[in-house]
Image (cartoon, rainbow, N blue to C red; front, side):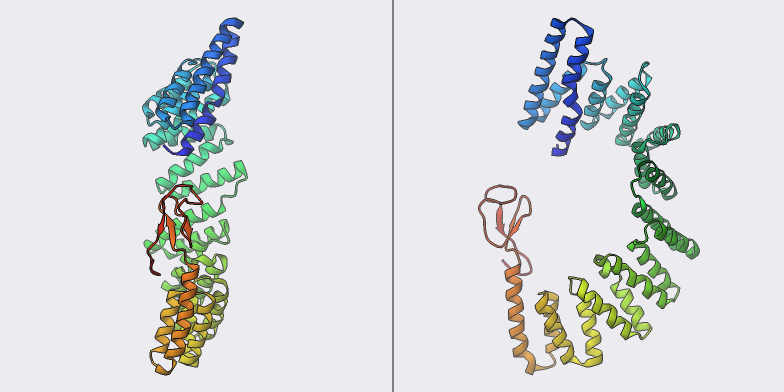
Length: 392
């Protein structure tokens, strides 16, 4: 069981001991209620001790006994249903929450919470149609039930019903003021992908426009737009769309670089290509734009100019791909071999110094020097040499 489970368990059960004592005091005399409170508190803290000592099975059994001792207490029953669901006993959780909903005397808030819990039981059991019906009833009765809306969004995502997912995401945003634009844009892009695969370019364009309306910085919408324009033979529009993607999120440069370079080439627009790649070289930490720009420099200014450019860049950002490019540019000129080898030696030394040689097998902590105890997870004997492209 994960640590998160125990955190949730503690949150769910912390009120039980106090609630049990309070209700016991209302139902009986001071002496009797005092004994009951002491007994329940003792059980609770014994269970807590088991939990802290990593004996979850014993802890859960005691907590279940504690919850069952207070069957008339609604809050305690909610905790019991939570435990059933977390243990995988979904049928028991469903029966418990159905019984709570049928109980008379519940407040509107308690009944709403019981319905939410029952909906989560249905989702855990894979009964998505029942969960959808329950959450929909809740939303129709009270539009300020964000949990139900959130669950409905999850259900419609799993069913790939993107229109309903969009509608409920908008309702959730209205109810909570939590921005849902980036998520809605993803759903619109899913619909655009569907339309594109079906050959419905007009609908695909409309969905991409809707994605931009939801999230003006949607990189996925930009990639889709570029692909549509390429398919339509409109290289100028494709270039504008593809260039916008890494300017919004530089990490997506590799996703658009090849089709963008192809579009530049078809349009014989090396000037715009050089300007864009120079901008990317300054912003992108990887070597892809350097290699692309070096090929243009080689074609327009010659091998020597390309070699100087790559050498300068690879010193600033040591890279195996950069080394390979330098070797390739030097093969046709033996006179440059000695100078190239000296540069490659310096770059190799930089790579070796900057690369962690050791890695913890438990937590993944990386280090350049060996430690017998991992500074991160504190385990002993888990940091070992790592084997990669740079060798051990």
